Image 1 (tube, helix red, strand yellow):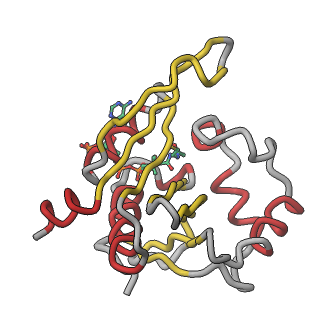
Image 2 (spheres, rainbow, N blue to C red):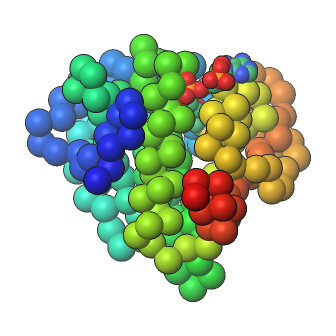
Amino acid sequence: MLNGNLVKLRAYDSTDNPQSIINISNNSDVLENLRGTIPYPFTYEDEVNFIKSNSSSKLTYNFAIEALDSKEYIGGCGINALDLLNSHCTVGIFIGAPYLNKGYGTDAMKVLVHFIFENISVNKIKLHVFSFNKRAIRSYEKCAFKTEAILRKEIFRHGEYHDDIIMSIFREDYYAQIL
Ligand SMILES: CC(C)(COP(=O)(O)OP(=O)(O)OC[C@H]1O[C@@H](n2cnc3c(N)ncnc32)[C@H](O)[C@@H]1OP(=O)(O)O)[C@@H](O)C(=O)NCCC(=O)NCCS
């Protein structure tokens, strides 16, 4: 059900090796693009707790991303916040360093967006991306996300303030595009 062309989204499970997840994620090319709630450096205990806490609740969903060809765990994605009262949600994604720029992230986001619009009654999916993260912005554009708002100088990285861009996709635009 949650298969794309390159990846599938699945639940984290007890066979996922926390150390191998750390090895692909504990990289500045990945972590500097994520919001500040993730510890750095990421420890074994952090990862064990992350996997344990990943039993999805009613308001969050967390998927492991697995490459279809190698069957390797390559990253994660999910819904970080779900507002059913107002029919929107916020998503997030990361791909491990060795797998960046190979199309996996765009494919995973397309699967996630499809899953959400097919299964959850939301009208809009949104995400935050830092202005310097050109690879992510391009990937989201390929999934038909559009810039909705810019929080100016919201993020402090490498001695400078950067904009936090909010991108979104609406249900009607998604179905107009895929049908
Ligand atoms: C964002 C992310 C999920 C995208 O997944 P990905 O598999 O790396 O991306 P893809 O290979 O599918 O697509 C990347 C696109 O960006 C382009 N790109 C890469 N670096 C770029 C740059 N510096 N400037 C502009 N475009 C760039 C690629 O050429 C490609 O576009 P194309 O197919 O038109 O050539 C992934 O890079 C990631 O997890 N990064 C680290 C963590 C992160 O940034 N998470 C998101 C936080 S908002």
